[in-house]
Every structure is written in structure tokens, then in C-alpha cells.
Image (cartoon, rainbow, N blue to C red; front, top):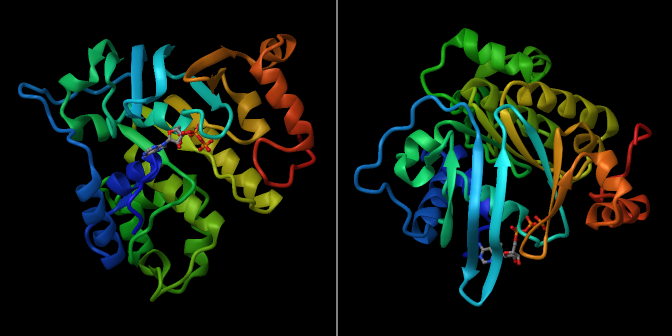
Length: 303
Ligand code: ATP
């Protein structure tokens, strides 16, 4: 296990690791060893059910004092809004979003959800209301059922089946002789990249959080799989505040708002057409995409 974690990998480790499979347990331990000192404040309260209005107020953050990544970010995300974050590699998109579940602590400024400072909420109640779907899905050695149920321990059979169906994992489950009880991982059935993503989506449906963070995959899937996964993700985003690190033009166009992260903060924001009509980063990014997509995936005809 490497020493350096990218923030969303940490998110994955916290949300998706279950100290059950050996690999997962090692990763969990490694995470604990590298986790900065983030703990519940004295007097922190369990978050009430959140609606999902997220506000950054002059938020500053850097991994080392001499290199600020976010130098005073102000941003309000409305309840139920889908916001696509784009920008050059290394600009700070992942970092920005990893502050919401408090994988890192802002150095200055504050982040509120529904008007409450997130530091006043217990970590478990905060993280319990944030769903994460990321490209490197962490699955533990166990059955498909256990891997989905990790989205919400104690879920009923019907709820697990429903989540699998919404994530379009039901076809796979039906095709396996052991169904949901099929063991996956090194000693079991190996899932394809697309199937792993569907499993992560099923987990998120089961968790049913008001806030969703998506780290869109950059790796190439075939066009059909890609479309289906995107369709599931759009459904998942319905009725939730959704923040997506976007690499696909279709996702970006579908978003209520695009936020361009560059130069230690938010360079510009708006809808696709408005940003294209301007003369800022987005237009340049988009122009560059014509030659080289936001991702390194071959583009689909729809784009
Ligand atoms: P990408 O599109 O490539 O994923 P990004 O916009 O998400 O990039 P971040 O991953 O947030 O960018 O990284 C912002 C900056 O912080 C980069 O310079 C990166 O090298 C640095 N960084 C990210 N994670 C860490 C870490 N755990 N420790 C130290 N520096 C880090």
C-alpha cells in the first residue's frame, strides 16, 4: 500500500473498506496510519437528516503550508443541484470535494451544510449522509450481497435487490448460479470494470444519501456500458445534491452548473452554453477537448 493517498481514495477507503477481506483490512489500517487528526469536536452533534445545501465560505487549504491548493474558495451549491467540476489535472477538484466529508480540514474559512458548520457535526453522521462513487471501486472479498449491503448495513433482501436493479446489476446477478451469494474477488468471480462500477452505484442507491460525490471514471469502457452507467448515475443523482468530478462531455452538459477549478480556486462557473460564449478557461478546455477529450477515453458519437 502506497504512503500517499489521493483524497478520494481515502474516501473510498473509509466508505468502502470493511475490515473483513484481508486486503480491505490492510488498506483500512494503512489509512488509519495516515489519516490526519480529524476527529469529532467536543460537543459535536449528530447531523439531522440533511437537505444538502453546501456552502464554502472563504475556504483555504493546502497539503503543505507553502503550496496552497485552495486559496479562499466561496461556493454555494443548492439543494438537489448537480454541479460538474472540471479543470486542469492537479487543480484541486478532488481536494475541494474531499473537504466536504472532512477527509481534510480547511485551514481557514468554513464549510456549512444546511447552514451548519460541518465541524459541529459528528463525523459518522456527516459521512453517513454522503454517498461516494469513484472510479477505483473498492470491493472486499465476499459475496455480491455483502458488497452491496455495505452501502447500508442491515438492509433487507428486497432493498438490496432493488438497489441492484436500479444499478442494472440484476442481469448479472440473474446470470450467476449463486446469484447474490456469488463470491467476488480473487477467489471468486472477477468482475469487469463496468460491473464493479455498477456495484458501487448499487451501494449508493442503497445508502440513499442526500449528498452524492461522483468521481467519474477516466478509463475507457465500451460505448454501450458507458451509456448504461451514465444513465444509472443520472438516476442516482435525481433528487440529491450531486457533485461530480466530470470527464465526460455528456455529464458536463447535463449538469445544472459547471464549476471550473483552476489557479487555486474557482476560475469561473455557469452553464455550458454561457461558459462557451465567454472567453475563459472553459472555452479553452472545451477547445482542447476537440483534439483531446476531457478524458482519454475514445469519444462516443453522441458527443
Ligand atoms: P485530477 O484531475 O488530476 O484528478 P484534481 O484537480 O482533482 O486533479 P487534486 O487531486 O485535488 O487535483 O490535487 C491538487 C493538488 O494537490 C495537486 O498539486 C496534487 O499533487 C496535490 N495533492 C493531492 N493529494 C495530495 C496529498 N494527499 N498529499 C499531498 N499533495 C496532494
